[in-house]
Image 1 (tube, one colour):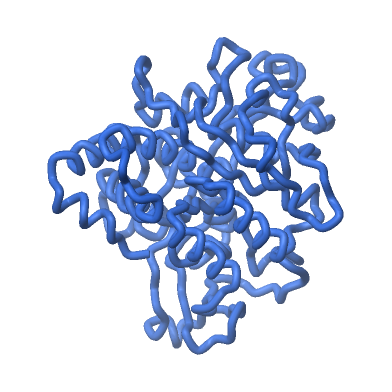
Image 2: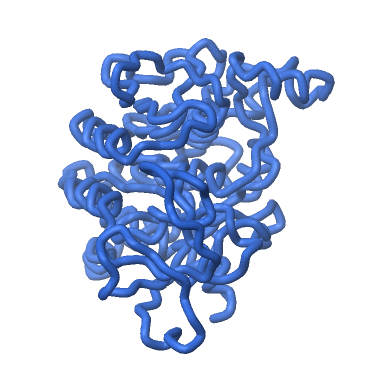
Length: 370
């Protein structure tokens, strides 16, 4: 995380910390015994969203890693691995464990719980690909990319409703980029969410990070998809996705004590601090980085706009983060891999400052295309 902060160009002193911002992590749970995550959650509002389950324990390591990237307190390793928003409050919603897959009704419950608990940001670092055997609700037809998606997706409707309630939804773009163009996963292409791809710490697109564009066919039945054929490529709606990219390669994150196999892998590596941390790669990591940055951004916005209506928060954050990423985009060809570009804190801070001094610019950002 120390190298991630350097890449993002966060200041060494006086860095934003996401204080008083609530971030919902919809994932595999959390290891609340990890030193970096003790007292980081709102335990009263956190829930296991699977029917007949009441256990937030993370046995898969994924949720603990995501939570640590966003708001790890950095109590070990002299703070080197602290999260990007170490003063933010986490809301944990467990929707899967191991390879069992994620059921869409559980995701819907998690999103509803997050909105009711007054989350400011939702991090969804799980996605569904037509290459999966099953995901988000059961077996699906394996289809080779590029993919065309229905304009109407149930999960997309849930995310859009959360966005309209003022909650920024940050979603991983997927890890199918090695298969080429048009590989954005569901729900990364959904209206109103911020889809995040992964880059390395040199700012280069990671080969496995899913690539755009996101194709939509308004004639497809709800929740359906198909392969894009060369003959109809120009006839489909092309959407710029991912929205942006962030570091997601080899990031050392808190490791759940219940992940015995992973702990054994890194125990001898001094960077693991005795098996307390593990290096993760993927768009899940990149999405968590953006959620942490979004928490810092919202904290800074509230300093000068404390009366910003809650329902306007998501739109403003969407506008600010996309605008900041555009500062790094250099060519049209990069759009498919990088979306609007790579996020860095100085560009975010500049966009915030311009909002303060330019009311017209501020109002434009409040009405971004969803």
